[in-house]
Image 1: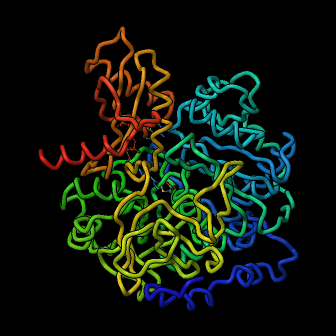
Image 2: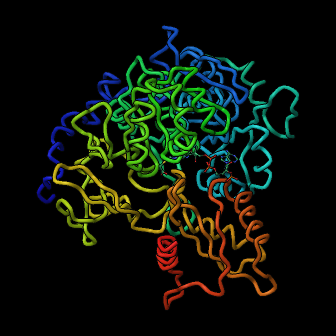
Image 3: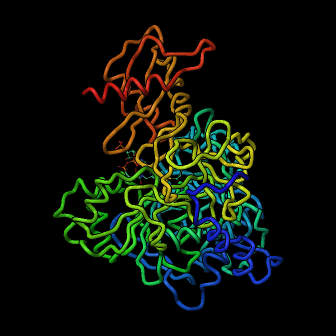
Length: 553
Ligand SMILES: CC(C)(COP(=O)(O)OP(=O)(O)OC[C@H]1O[C@@H](n2cnc3c(N)ncnc32)[C@H](O)[C@@H]1OP(=O)(O)O)[C@@H](O)C(=O)NCCC(=O)NCCSC(=O)CC(=O)O
């Protein structure tokens, strides 16, 4: 290790606060007894009629569930999974909206020592097929809205479907609700090691399809630390993280994190809009809100009158997924009287750089924040040397000196981001002498849109499936609402002519086949794409030209 740069004066402090071994020992008495995520997030809070979940249906009906209710439901899920042949280490996938059964499914999966894989409900068959093929999931649990997509997935595993009254069960499926009604709620948790997996996530990179991110049980320590130190969650908070649990921020910190601390979480089944968000904040008296800047910009766009009715209600607001604009910080202060703090993380390792609501000395307005205690974050040059303040480089985790770090490589795929004792995030940053970090951008072609991380290769692959498309290059272009939007440059097959109708058809094709959130909102037809002499598409040239074009407008 080179000298600790001045940027990280709080690093020793961090190591003292969080040693994974100490934390696991604290939670379990003796690490040799093992760990079970259901016990951590539910089992140990039963018997006190303690609130665990407020679930608001799409129609606005509020139902509350205690940890005891979730223990009962997840026990039944565990029994059902066992009867379907699922055992410790097997993967169970869930493609469900934010309904109480989703929490029961996740906890029940963990209870029997199995691994939960989220499938975002906006995914089309192509995105689902890829994820199920590498995870080798033994079962998918879904609902009728999403069930049809699985028919287009080759070699899909067994399916359990959650039916509403009056809906018919597709042939061969297990009726999830009916099976739970008769299953025993008594299910002894299967204890595992800290290095065993309990989630299988996925994330997009520049090249190839999304890769699996295996999450070991030891990550619970990091998830709890984020909730306590960065979100600053308190027992008296009414907490709502609006992120979808189909992705890391939602699964880690809308479900796992609050339940781990024994604090209730909130689900709203309906689609996001500013009005319903204000309604729910007012109705439940939400005091701690988490979500992405796009969601916050949409709240701003609703105007000060809409904000006025919840002004002063929010104690703290946390923002993740994209850099937070200073304008949002000012607006939240003026119209909601709420401190909104920027937090940074990735599916790999979770949140790592934050303005900590719970640690006031680790806040610097306008910056991305400080390394979370438990992580030693550094900035590296291309050769892998640690840089000092005010020098741009790649943000990285010093593996040996970050006790909360848990990511150790992609599922059955190379992980060039881990090398020389560091994990490189792929984000370009620099830091101030006080250790606060400022973001400059991505060091690769990954697109950040509405807080989602979108891999251009996936979108290009979906476009090329369309008969009109010969070649495609996909880049992120700046957008005031969504940070970036996906733009596709398309070279058409000879028999086709570019038109608005064809652009729309291509967008819809990607939306249906790949995912509703990653379709190109702009399509430009071009005669050729810029390439290197070896034939590699130079996306950065397209992006640069777009940025310049937009500046000139
Ligand atoms: C800010 C938002 C609430 C705004 O929601 P919107 O609905 O306006 O827009 P969107 O971008 O989600 O959706 C784009 C399009 O997909 C559609 N769509 C969205 N969800 C859908 C679903 N479940 N089923 C079918 N369609 C769906 C929308 O209607 C919309 O269509 P149309 O365009 O036709 O209107 C949302 O984008 C959001 O929650 N973003 C945060 C994402 C997030 O959690 N990021 C953290 C991940 S960070 C993380 O986990 C780390 C990592 O990434 O590695």
